[in-house]
Amino acid sequence: MTRLNRLALALGLGFLYAPILVLVVYSFNASKLVTVWGGFSTRWYGVLFADAPLIASALVSLKVALVSAGIATVLGTLAALALDRHGRFRGRGAFTGLLYGPMVMPEVITGLSLLLLFVGIGVERGIATIVVAHATFATGFVAVVVGARLKGFDRSLEEAAADLGAPPWRVFAGVTLPLIAPSFAAGFLLAFTLSLDDLVIASFVSGPGATTLPMRLYSQVRLGVNPEINAASTLLIGAVSVVVLTASWLTGRRGGAAV
Amino acid sequence: MNGERAHRLSGRAGRALVRGLPFLWLALFFLVPFIVTLKISFSSPATAQPPYLPVLDWTSGPQGWREFFEALDFTNYEMLAYDSLYREAALSSLAYALAATAILVLIGTPLAHAMAQASARMQPLLVALVVVPFWTSFLIRIYAWIAILKPEGLLNAALLRLGLIGQPLNVLDTPLAVLIGLTYAYLPFMVLPLYAVMSRLDPSLPEAAADLGASRARTFFTVTVPLSLPGLVAGALLCFIPMVGEFIIPDLLGGSETLMLGRMLWTEFFSNRDWPLASAVAVTLLVLVVGPVVIFRNAEERREEALR
Image 1 (cartoon, rainbow over the protein chains, first blue to last red):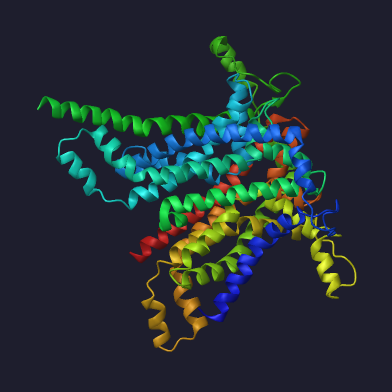
Image 2 (image 1 turned 90 degrees about the vertical axis):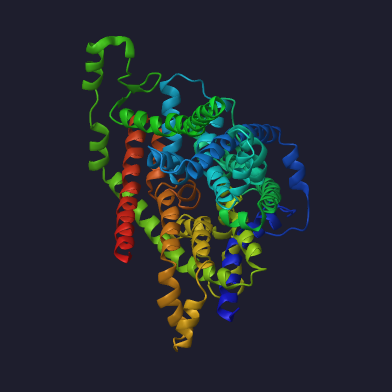
């Protein structure tokens, strides 16, 4: 590796990690002032765990993330199968547009338009509407992850099963499903973290009584920097790092690039 | 032979289900909402539940439907066109997104190149290192910059101690802070597609250029970069589109002066409760981001055809 490349890596990764590092370090700061170091302390974690509304919103977020990631995994896997197996079917362009559109769409548009739909059809807003919204925008991400796995797998195994007389559903359940299962888990975890992270869409489609963790954090962040948020952020970053490492371990070395 | 036919039939039903389920879900919760938004963008705000007029009543018969459509108008769009605040917000959204995309290309290309040049053993680790921040909460990563950029923050503390500046710089709540935030948050989106293309480049091409006497810089700019163009375009689009409608970054880092459409939509909706105007902003935003994408893709297709 040349010296220039090493420099690019150091600067790039330093840029990506420095703010996160600052956040983590200052979550252990004894002082209430975020920019003055007052010695090591875990007091803000104590404050955090005594913050009942924050804990309640974290539970709401977990519930929403689990259910919406489950739905997105099913829909995304089906979509990936359709794109991989069905060739040039009618409406393929529209299908891919619908699938990948939500991935790049500015969140304010997705959030507002879904809210208007829910109001228009008279659905009561709450946890269920956030679940639907999150499942909708995570489906494309799952499809990308599962699709990458489908592309790289040996079709002759399925053909062998079919030649031996297995009906299509048995080929799918007995051969295809076990082979793509790791990407499933990776897709689920990705959908899960996306849901856990979303502020904008949830703010639009949520109703009274359904406050997610990012919504709660945002209302505090607007008031300024505070060490309790640093502590909450550190825990979230830790959790996400574990999830990412698990996911890249599950998909093997090629999966990381698929995300 | 009957069994085979049954197979084929169940196969066809299965295929319809595999395609149909995600298609119906996405049509209902992604496409239909846009149509509803478009409709409401032609309505007027009202102090009612829902807070807009007219409300379509399907059971009102043809006469009622006609009255409904006659009550729709372009007032919201006229307001957007004539109010200089919205014109400025639209222009500055595009300007911020373009500037940040340009910075991302400048930072992302050397980073992705360095990743692709690293040893095969290092590459998965480097990819994971770029992916982890992308999975980490967006809100938290932007929040982290407040403590760094504010007047009594860490950046100023460091610069003052080094004696580089005499008094604290005002970075937070300026356009510079918004650009830093955009660049920071979207860097993984630029690097990953670029890396995906660069890591698959045939290494014999830059080698050939080097053998023919091209300097490293010349090889990079005349061989590696042009061959990586597809990744560059994918990364640029992946960043540009959501950045135009960005809300969190201008809201937390930009102060009250920063005008961006995503933030105005938020304000119209949550503070002013003007749902029709918010809808009109959403439609405008959509047109603004779809326009460049269509132009880009057409240019790409023409370029590919020319190469064929």
